[in-house]
Length: 424
Image (cartoon, rainbow, N blue to C red; front, side):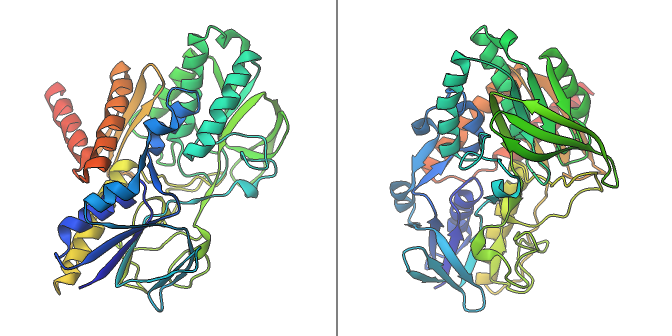
């Protein structure tokens, strides 16, 4: 019998637990450890931040769900991780031993790296967490009663740009519905070298599609933009050239701002030699397995991936849903093989498929593999993306409640490939 722990109960962690339940032996115990008692569907947070979703719409109480699947659950944050002794220490003081562990925590949000950033002690809102989004929603309603300038985007070191574009467009859509868009100048600020880079070097014509969308919606933008500091109602931004020279400085006034922060690894893993890189992200091989500690696997945003290319400012590589889905399947399959004294053979595909919703339409893109050069490099836009994102939300919430782990992204990507072949 093996004790298998999954740390994290998000879009990577719960499918990992469900896949492990299928891949492991009947006698093996699987337990999920989470810092919250609920699952949150993070892709819907931009909707929650403008009041289009309530907390109960996109969260699920995990204890009864996991109990029904025969999976243990501990809602207690991890405060220490000891890979030498295969021990996890929780905030309550409880120690948990493991034979194998899958780390799927997601990142720590590094708001503190920029003065005045963030929803806790700063002046910008966040959509990275459902609690942040609900607070932002209340402040959005207040803003709409007395509108003014908006600054939205992603700071240097961020590695997930899609939600920033989504939220900018969703705010625009909501303001137009309220018939107050004419009272709200909007500026998009990003460390990306160009609009639509996305940390991926662009996918298809994401540059053209997103620039066109911003022009249509009267959203100004700054790229290669370093957020220096934020004060109440004012953001200080420098445009930076390759080599680090500042080519322009801006003081942007705002009444409402949401900026995605840089990510880093969570504190319990920080500084563990051989486990993490300097930013605290878990290093893994092609089997999602850490080289120094082979009973440690990791999936999702918490893993280390080197930047795609040299840019004027740090631009991280996103871990998209399709990519995470393939990591989860590989990790679970490899643990199942190891438990049966077989060498691990499963490798993730690391493809990218994304539905970016704009509130009334959206942009979808498919990259196979995620990083160029690619075999498939496709992007499209239309109202169908908005409805597809709604369908994805409903599908994934049902999947979590039912304990299912079907590969949504893989199936969707194959449908798009087949449709594009017919079109060609």
